[in-house]
Every structure is written in structure tokens, then in C-alpha cells.
Length: 303
Length: 162
Image (tube, rainbow over all chains, first blue to last red; front, side, top):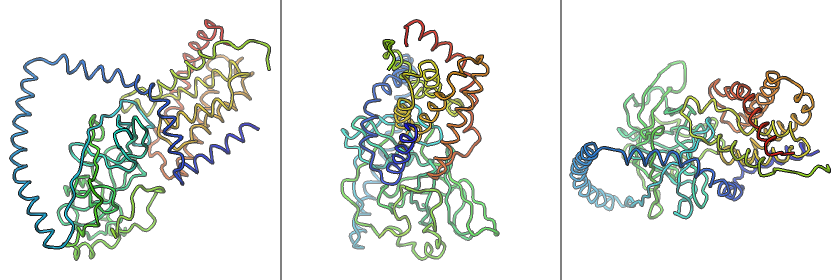
């Protein structure tokens, strides 16, 4: 019977796609075939943007330019300090005998205005393998990490956002370097930090930055801000929620990041190791909940 | 093989393309969740109207496209739409005779069944939806069925698709 045959094929496809990731070629080919439709659907949004830009008044443009000028000035002053600090950092690192942080190349991509599955947090961007986008590439916006590339086609690629329930990202608390994992919850603008003991030093308002462990995201980018820490003595771990720093709901432009060379496991969170070891016993999640093809590599170890 | 010449394949394809476009149409967040299953509705109509032409295989292929569009695991929507096509083919002689309101009920049953299968697959993959809003398409799809039905019937008669 046809139905039985097709059902079997579907199950096989799902298995191959989910467990083995063998079907990227098929998905890519189908996406390319569908890209004209996606292009057409994106047109109204583009026209809208264009009209919005075109119909702005002279005064509002001037105000914008003024604001941008001031912003550039302030940021340039900050950059001057940063350049000196970077030099100092490299010098100190060479004194310590650890490898220097590497430079990164960036490319701006634009989100294509088509809706995808409402219960998977994904967006489509207009950069593909012709722009050297690669699978698992980190994606940022102006405020922080957005997610990572999961499917690449020649013309566009799919980005899995931080808030997707299958996403996990290794982070550290910026204040004290405590390592943790930030998992997506499937709820908009909410991450959960699992397996942090009740006595850990973490509080609302703490900034979480990428730790660079797992070798996928570059270290030091803001990921989320802790919004809620619930310490229930009856439970082994604190319940910690965080809000992504990136504007996941509103962004239109995204930044794709390339590292210019592979990082040789920089001994990053070493200085605060004592505290981290003490409070952070549960860093290696025992049975990473509901993240089967978890796009995180070993988050706890880092070689 | 029927002796009736086959007319209007392009119309059928066009209707499916429109359904796919409606599936991609950017909607505000609250409406996004409640988006009706356009492809399923169109598929049910054509299975019912032209059961000798549209069937399980076409449903399955459409599902594969839908999987790519929505970024779900390949095969999820394929399985769901193949099942919906199969059930419609089993029931089409009855559905045709029902008044529109009862047809909508049958459509609701089909969509609910599809969503249940879909939920099951998502659960197996470890990413079950967190809210009851997941079931909203099962309400919006039958509500829109009468219009889909009337529009597609007019299109079919106008272009003599058979």
C-alpha cells in the first residue's frame, strides 16, 4: 500500500535528518527550488522598508545623522581606549604563555520576512554558502548573540535562535566567571540556566557572556541578562531564568562571524577557577534535558 | 486510467503554490500561532474534488516542501499530509454530500489528527510545544474551510479542471 510505504519513508527521513544529519543536500536543493516563492513573499516587506526610508522628512533625517555622529564620536573615544587595552591584553597573555585572542571577520545579513514554524525559533537570512556561510556559524546582532546557522543553501541559510528548545550555549557569568549552560525554553525571550546549585553566586542583573567553551561561539560576547533566581531549599538546583541580550523579536540585520584562525583552547576561566570549581559542580549536565541533537559540544570541559 | 482528458494541472499547482505562500506570509506574533493549515485545506479540497488525480503521493511531496519551509525535521509534515490525503480519499464520497458546516467538522477532525501526529513527532524529538496555542490551527482551519472550498470550487469550474 502506498500510504504504508510513504509512512515508512517519512519515518526513515526523520531518523536520517534528526539523528544522522545526512539530508542537508536534499533540504538545500528543495530550499533553493522554493527560494523564488520566498523572495516574492519578502517583497512587500522590502517595499515597505523602502517606502519608509523614502518618505522620511528632511528634518528627521538630519536628526538621525546628528544622533549617529554623536554616537560615532563616543564610540571612537571608547575604541581608542580599547585598542590600548587590547595591546595590553595580548602582552599579558604572551607573558602568561597562553594564545592570544584571535581576530574575527564579520558580514551583515538581512532577515528574510517569511514565517517558519511557530514552535521552532528559527529565522531565514539572505546569506548562503556563496557568502562562505557555514553550518554552525555563530550569528550576532548589535546587542549580543542571536544563535547559530543550522542549514545552509547557496542563497540563504536558517538560523536557530537561542530561545529554541533544542539550543544550548556555554556561557559564563561576566562578574565572576562562573561557567554555565544557557538553554532555550521555547518561550520568547527566555532562557533557562540549569544545574546551578542553590548556593552559587549568581543574582538577577548578572550579565552572561559566551565562554568560548564548546569551540563554537567566540568568547566574550553578551548572551543574556539574568532576570530571576529562585532558590528553593527543597530542590537540588536553583531555578534561574535569563533574557537574551539580542533583540530576537525585532531585529532585521544580523552579523555573521568568522574566526580568522581556530582557537587553541585558551585557558580562559582559569583565574577564577577556585570559586568556579567550588560552586559549579553541576556544570556538566547529567542527562542534558530535551536537547537530543544539542548543538552544544562538551560545555563543561573545554579540553 | 480514466478516459477523461486531464485539464488544468497548472491550476492545481498554482493553488498549491498560493497555499505555500500563505503559509510563509509574515504575520504578527499572535496570529502566527493561529495560522490555518493552508496546504492541508487545499490538499483536502483537491483530494475530494479529483480523487483520481490527487492522492497520497502528492500530499507526501507537498509535506516535504512544507518541512523545508517551516524548518521542521524532514518527513514530519510529509507523513501528516500523506495521512490526511489518505483519509480524505477514504471519505470523499461522503464528504461531498455533506453541507458546508459538516464538511468543516470533518476538516477539523482531519487537522486535529494531523496535529496530534505532529505533536507526537515533536515530542519524540524532545521539543514539544509549551502552550495550548498549539491547537489553534485546528480551530482556524475549519473556520476558513467554507471560503477555501467555495473559492477553489469556483476556480475549478472556471478553468474546467478535471
